[in-house]
Image (tube, rainbow, N blue to C red):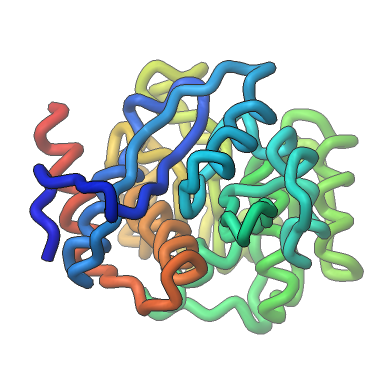
Length: 288
């Protein structure tokens, strides 16, 4: 196993680009996965400002990096810069990971399937279920498509703007419905088997750190609540859901699910989920 302090000319490199990206948990998660498998790989955070995405991606290929994770706000731009897109990335129009294949750059998206991976590991299955996805950004797009692909009976996309919600809901085909957030009625909340926050609401330093978008008091006891935010690990939404005894998954578990699929895409190895989760939680603990 490679010591984390020893990077040689044989070390294979990967990383994450975004703006900002220094607080990312991805380096801790991926480096823990490499260590668990004894891989001579290293993963770093690479800040890239808007306008520099294409140069960064082409530079990564020229330098021989194995791949890059892509986070906000670069997912759509990165998709346009790739030489080839996987079917998932084509349908969504955004990528959260790229892979170097020779001198070509392939873009992929594991956001939605990674969330379902985490939910499945916790015992939740989308087939025949009703879900509410909060938000209309890249993560909402990926999750909406993944839920429909996994057999969800209904996927309601609820966002501040009804037109944006409807556009995302189209990715779910016949089972998709897009509405303004304030138009979700009591029956809608009560009939949900899953509520997923994909917005930054509830995030420390975000637009509404003390707020929870869902009407948690209306949710049924069977409903699962997930939140993509991981700063803090216990968001107002998750606190409210746990207070009602509902099953929950937080941003760390979801990020590990997404990262696990990227790791496997790059290495063709099974992701060591326990090691990845432990590294993420350890990193968050040291940041407090």
